[in-house]
Length: 273
Image (cartoon, rainbow, N blue to C red; front, side):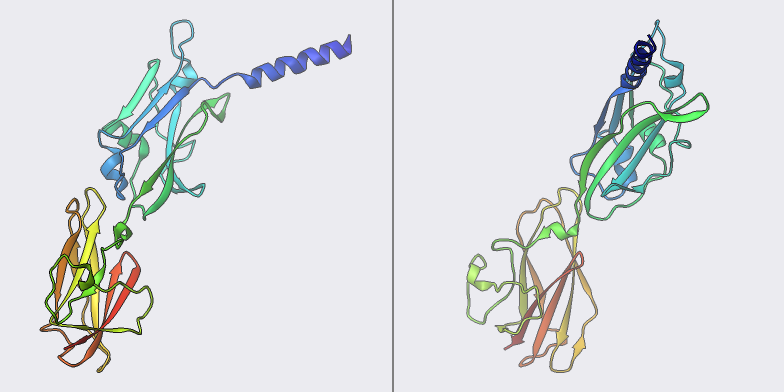
């Protein structure tokens, strides 16, 4: 009889812990290309959080009504953005079977935004409640992976290369007009005229890209001040001219162009003729 009673108690306990959470059906909607500044998309129409709780006896569970919604951003499993904890997160105000947080309501549950570096992240949403004096989870943790694109995706690929114009006349579309970039300080020196040309494409759909470049005179060991070229999106492959007439590299001298695209550096050595 005692064995039967113990087995029965274990079965009851297992059934209690196997019950589903009172809040389910969490769905996270994100913009196709989230901005690095979180505040720009958290309050936008493309961002929303949905969740469901089944009423009992015609009303929402009181624990659900008083629940808190914790929204944070993680990188490699570690929280890197979000003001709140389970105990301090904003009240969800869960007052109907299906809830949707979007626009200003989504921004309010997220808290203060932050700026993310390019890379892969996950957005985490989970509900908590104070049950019998303890803060417990009222839902599973729902995560949504997303990526922040950076100016490193202002790409050099295929015939999109930094190059130097040769003295002989060639058409602008001639690929032989361009020399490839070097990821290391280049030993080869190419002959140029008065202009360096660059073909680039900004693959970001909305944000402009920035290219920073300097020119070093290898004869005098002097380097120019950094210059910035802004590449607008949705222009496809474009051609940029970098004039050398007034640069620190005079005719007959050699120089190195250093191109910086989001902390990545590319080089080309040239001699003006």
